[in-house]
Structure formats: C-alpha cells, structure tokens
Amino acid sequence: MHWQHAGPPLAAGSRVRRRAAPACVAIIGALSLALTACGDNQTSSEGGSSAGAAAATSTSAGSTPSLKGKTIAYIQTAPIPYYEYTKKGIEKAAQLLGATETKSYNSALSTETELANFRTAITEGVDGIILEPIAAGTAKGELRLAKQAGIPTVLLYGYTPDVEDQAAGFQQTRYDDTGCAAGEQMRKLLPEGQVAVITGTAGRGDAEGFTDGFKRCLGEAGRVVSVVDGNYDRQKASDVARDLITKYPQLKGLFVHNEDMSLGVINALGSKASGVTIVTQNGSPEGIKAVTAGRIKATVGWSPSAEGAMATRLLAEALGGREPSPKLCLTPFAIDTPDNPQASAPWEVTDANIRKALAAKCAAPGTKGS
Image (cartoon, rainbow, N blue to C red; front, top):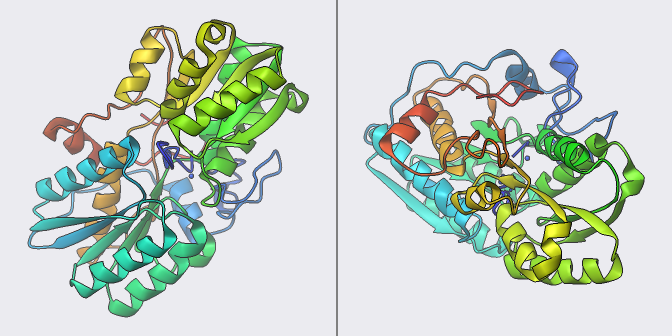
C-alpha cells in the first residue's frame, strides 16, 4: 500500500500495499523498516529494536487465538481496492475467531478524519483496534490515546521504534525488500535504458522505502531519470506518465508503486506502452490479469486480505493476554510474472484463504516467505 499498495509492505507490504521494510539485516540490530530513506548502509527505524529482533528470530504463528465476544475496530486509510480487501480480510478473520462485531471507519486520506474515527472507536467502547494510519506522525498520538483508554491497538503499517511500546503489535510488508525485488526484476528485464519511478503517497514510509529499495537493487542509480508522485491514484499516475514520456522520449522502464496506478499508466501511454517495461507491486486480481496478458512484466505481490487477517491475529493474541510473537510480523511476498502469474497469495476473501492466513508464519527478514 500503502495506497493500493498496497501499501503499505515493510515490503507492507504492502501501500505496498502497505502496502512498509527491513533490509540490511544484521541479526538483532538491523531490521530496517523503511520509514526513513533506506540504502546500502541502511539505518532505518527498526534497527536495534526488540520488535525488530523478534521478527528476526521468530516466524511462527503459534496457536490460533480467540476473539470470542469481542468487538474490534478497523481504521481504514481510504476507500480504494487495497484497503477494501484489507477490511474484508479483517472482518472475515474476526468472524472466524469468534468476534461479536467489527466496526470499520474510513479516514478518506484525511488525518483529521482519522483522528476523529479513532476517538469515535474509543468512545464506542471497542475492545481492540487495528489502525492503518495515513502518516507515521498521526499514529503516535492515536496510539497514546488508545493506551490511556486501555484498548490494545495493532498498527498496520507505520512501525517506528518510538511507538513500539504504545502498540500491541505491528503488521506490514518490508518496503525496502519489495522495492529491491522490483529493482532486481527491472534489471533482469531491462539491463539498460532510462527508468523512472511513479510513487505512492509519501509520509508513512512505504513510498520512500519502495523507491530506495528499487534504486539500490537496480544497481545503476544514474538510470533513474525521474521520481514523481502518483499519490496511489490511477488518474494522477496517468497524468504524470504522459508528462514523463514527453520529457523523456527514450524512457524504457517504469517502476510504479502499485498496479492500480500501473493500469492508468498503460492506458495513458497508449501505443507507446509496448515499448516501456512496467514493473509494479501488489498482486491484485486486476493486476494479475495484466501480468498474465504481458502488459505488466512483473509485480511484487502480497495479499491485503491475508495481511488484514494476520493483523487480526496479532490483536487477538494481545486481547488474550499474550505478547504477540513476533511483535512485528512481516507480510510474505512473491514475484508474479507472465510465466508464473499467481505466485503470490490471493486477494480473494474466502474462509479457506483467511484460515490459511491466520495460520501463516510471519516472513523472515530478507526472504520472500510463502
């Protein structure tokens, strides 16, 4: 995400989408979720944290907890496909875990609305909250409010060490790692030529991490001629793609932070799209169709519905009096290509898919997971 991140993936994945990313792992000291810029000598916000250490040493989901009799809330970033699938995944997971009700609040990309939604959830007496924040800064104050109210809260994207003690757990993709995977794919598919990046919304860490990881693993920074903001919006991405192809007529590759924007880019480029290698993120149903057709050459995929279920599992553990292990759970991702278009976890919300997510292991740093 985030974001259709996705986004919002360390990769959140993923926004991407999640969707948020550890990289440059050095056992206990260097899980690096890129809420800050991330390079070859990364020192991002996860380094040295106990949550980072837990993610580095434990990937077991453990026994499935219960939400019997509980009412939980999901504070949604925006009404776009990635977050709609996240919501459905949370609702289905909560139902399967025995929750009485799931309340959803849409922040519509407004930090003021997000804060109002958070206060409403507290006032309505929910037992636990899953917060997918718009920006890292807004999450800090909201987590303090939840802690004062005694309501466990899981942060879905936006991890930083300074909120580690405020949240019950963290779920997200590995921003730098998914960006790196995209960079490796671009280097493989397009060994030379000008490349540009169309980003998601900056401020939460995922967009920054995706770009930094991509540049690092593309290997030749000079090939990236432009990085422009697409704001995780299909129409805006279309507009900036037209500008890019006009300004850089020799442009050969585009890393677009999510598939929703990529589809807008393909339409905007028209007949020129066949001459531009597009690498993106998410593994959405619509995106996989474009990958299968060869319109997108590779996508780094993860499932927001599975990610939402995993976040629900973290919240259930906290409400059951257990310390989630690991406290920072990294969402697995995989590479979808025209030759293997369904390598990543499906987005479709079914009992079977969500049960699988509830039993899934957190991904280990530096790996795709499964």
